Length: 197
Image (cartoon, rainbow, N blue to C red):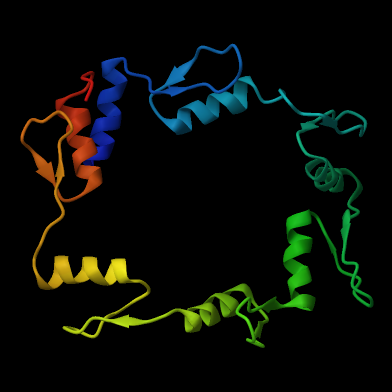
């Protein structure tokens, strides 16, 4: 038993012989049923390709495609954190460049990008909440629900107040139509697999 049509469709691909996800490595002809299977193959079979930074610690020899990845890895051997905060008076150290950049926002904050707005958020979530205050609000004249643009307001009125349903016709012209893209794609995979639209 399958919980969703998507899972059933993926399972049926195992039996159909269809392998739509091709390995992205040059010269490799492998193909897979799912994107995740292809990524697992890439990690296992082609993991050293394009990796220019090698750990020189005795007995290690791991390869990395980016210098900052190697730098962060070296911490496992030395226990010396490689990324240091450069703000005067701050002595914090971090295992990765991303963690350092995130920390620097404690000093710098998240300034609002709107002209003339003095807001400076201490956290990313406070900044995101503040950004919503600058959005233009368009209220629906029927239910007072608010929208960020005319298109969403128009679609809301069509679907909610006028009862118009969006219809996606099957590209194989079998006469079936659907209100959701996922349902139409599942129908095509189940009913028309192997056919060209």
